[in-house]
Length: 127
Image (cartoon, rainbow, N blue to C red):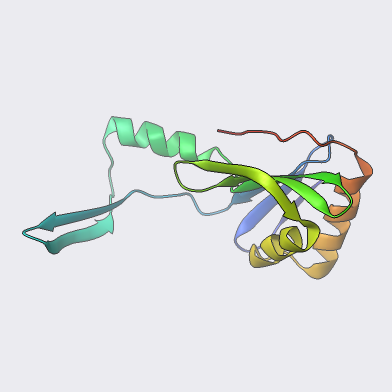
């Protein structure tokens, strides 16, 4: 199952994993300081080869993934910039996250019910 909002895309795989990707690709923001003063703060229009490769890798990773852990608990794998956070969140917190990603209440209900049909407590790591 795949659903898109104005800002995000959601995939529900066969194992019951909800995976959310931002539609807008991440960009490299450069801030440069000289003598304690900000002299440059902009998006890098043409990053060098190493940064371009890094951006390609980062853009292939989801914003977060969620697996039902039973009851009202969900295993979460969350993108925190260049780190990821793994742990448990409540179903209410998963609903709030999906709402903030622009999905409707009916889409959220459909996805959560479908994900809970698959009993899979495995946390998938994308990083």
